[in-house]
Length: 598
Image (cartoon, rainbow, N blue to C red; front, side, top):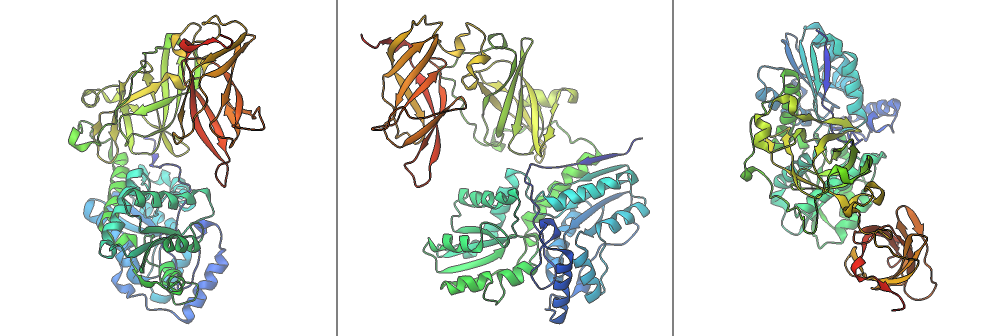
């Protein structure tokens, strides 16, 4: 039988933070790609000169015994030389996994050789690196191997781990790599809630709770801004997320805290362990530590030296990610369960007012960007391509997360009763899940059941594909849904007036209505006059338009491809200190067209 590697990879968040840091001086993981091994080694040598008391290493279980059995669950961490924190975080996660999966042998592997060597030299404790852990599994004739990382998120180190496991995949019958902690939107929300619950006693309205992450120069550093938005969305506006190595920086966080009326600051690491960064960069007594900087601003400061791995909800998330990986090795999950309405978020009403059903025969064969509305905020579609071919339509939907394994073109009850061959599986593209589904018609809701990876249940969803988001050339000649054209209205060359409606933006801007319409050589152009002189350009169908006047309110000559259907435009305003592009739509009412000289 051919041996397989089944890796469970999650969305594109190209970042791996240190779950922990080694030694007692500030060092940076090779995952960040910024600190050389020699610098790390120097840090360890300095640490040995004045080694802090990090706890009793003999209380920690390195989980490197043999006699593993047929099924192994290898827990891979960056590692930390802080003994108590290693036991209370990484060790606690390993124990939670062992309790959840008693039939699996739970073993440990660290990715940082610096940490491994330091613990061995200082405490005499031997911890396997990943290569050694894989070799141990091979020697013990493990059949099924699941690797569960304790990394916070996807990134360099996670990808390196997948590559290393892949090189050894032929030693096992089946292999799977589980997801890191922060993978889906739900993961972010649950981690934020866990932190909020753990710090609830400090949440008194007078205290700013500051979380210190690691940070990276990579684009995926945006994950910290994402976590900040999640806290804000929970109403925890007194929670602030910063980083040691990137942005938001300590200065950024201090500036944000100073905007509030806070008397006290509580500092806590947003890392799996409370290692070097937590003990020194955050809670140290040096003038440049986070504690000292906030004290210099006049705040009373308290430091919580607690890693995320100590929190039971965090441990449970890792258990769930490991469960998904085990399911991929042991077989597909049971798909007969259907979520009831009490288990679903309140559906979003799909507005079909004024819409008329559009089928494939009204469209020209081709592939187009199309807007799609979902009845559930949990089934978020970030992009969609509509393909029209041979009288049929399909939509390739790119999801905002990786929480769904299958979709089905029908109701959840129908999906649960259907043959598995009829399920539509995801494809992974650039770390995102995509589904290609049949589309019966545009501008009318169609059912699309979705199977949740975590809940292992089918959920009822509805989708609405909008024809008014398609370009005019997508519609077949004479198709009513493309709106009225110069040709269909039999407009002769000349000037006309027509009512125009502006939508979008803040709702405060407006344009003059009726607008002057000029017809020349079968094409229509509208003179759009804004209610402000602050628009310096417009974008229409990818073309940049400059103002046609120098004084007074901004005016532009805008090509009108069709009447009676929204025309997406972008207008750049200079009203703010920094110019800002704002999206609008213009709709020209053909029933109001009259000659300009009438």
